[in-house]
Image 1 (tube, rainbow, N blue to C red):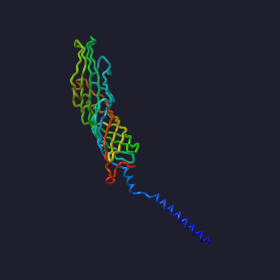
Image 2: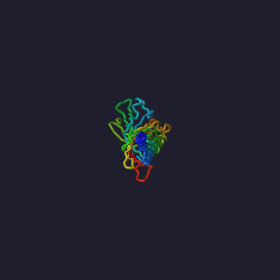
Image 3: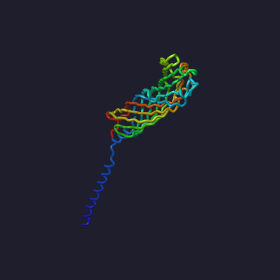
Image 4: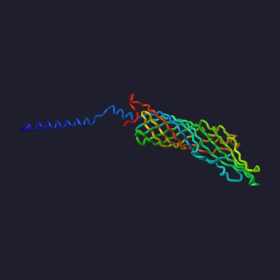
Length: 294
C-alpha cells in the first residue's frame, strides 16, 4: 500500500516541475522582429535644410580712428555699436547622426550678418567758440560668410516633441563685405545754423576683413515628429573667438581714410534663430515609420 501512496506524490511533483519550466521558457521568450525595431530606432541619420535670421553683437578689442582730435579727449570719438539691432539671414544644410538620445551634427551653411555703429566729431574755432562744426557718422557693415559648424546635441526628452541642448565649434570663411557710411552734421560757422546730410559712401570692404575666423556655440532647440518628417526649431548663441577684421588693411581704403573712418579690432557674436525640416535616411522596411514609436 505504501507504494501506491508514493506514486501519486511523484506524479504531483513532476507536474509542478514541468509547469515551472514552462513558465520560465515563456518569460525568456523574445520577439526578434521587436528587437530589430528597437535597435533600429536607437540609431538614425537625418538630412535636412534650415533657414532663419540672426542678430549681431560687436566686441571691441582695440579702438582705431583715422582722425586724432587736438583739443579734447579721443575717447569722445569712440564708435558706439548697436548690439542685436540689425537682422541678418542664414541658410544651413544639416547632416546629423543620432544614437540613443545623442546626436553629432555637421551643418555647413551661409550667413549674412549686419551690424551698425556711429561716432561724432566736433571742430571749434579756438578764437570764437560759436564757430564750430559737428559731424555725425552712421556706419552700416554687411558681411557674408560660409561656415562649417560641428555640433553635439542631447535630447532632453524622447517623445514626439523632443527638446535638446547643444554645444559646438564653427569655422567661417569670408565671402564678401560691403560698407556704407552716411555723414550728417550741423554747421554753426557759416553765419547761421545749417544742418546737412551727405549721400552715403558705399564701397566693397572685403579687404578690410580677415579671410577666416572661428568661434564657439551653444543653444537650445526642439524637434517635432510629424509622420516620417521632423520639424526643427533651433536657437544658437555664437561667440567669436578671433578677430573678424584685417589688421594689415585697416587703412587700406583711401575713401574711408579720407572721411576719417578706420575699423576697430573686433570680434563678432551672433544670436541665431532657425526653422527647418529633417528627413530620415535609414528605413527598416517599406511602410515602416522611422520615428520613435515607443
